[in-house]
Length: 105
Image (tube, rainbow, N blue to C red):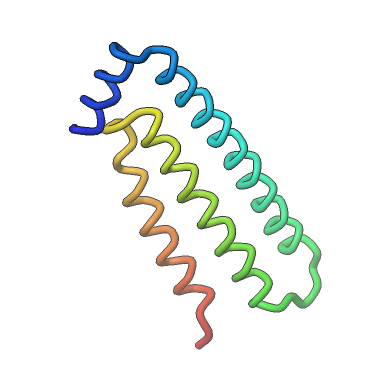
């Protein structure tokens, strides 16, 4: 809520700087989105190779994907505070279950 008020005040008092910050954040969001898609494609490629794959490779790609998704969620929060709060919870749950599934027995 306080972050929303700060952004609103900044838009009124310094509209040019606020617009530039939003543009930069949006560009970061697009870059993180692109990176997430590349990592998903890499995971999909590993899946469809039909070869024996080291689980550590899958774990490494997943950890990188999880970090990229966290950055994506952070950028969304910066663009639209108080709008996508539920995404944090979903990301944490998804990350936990995937790491659990990839953990050694």
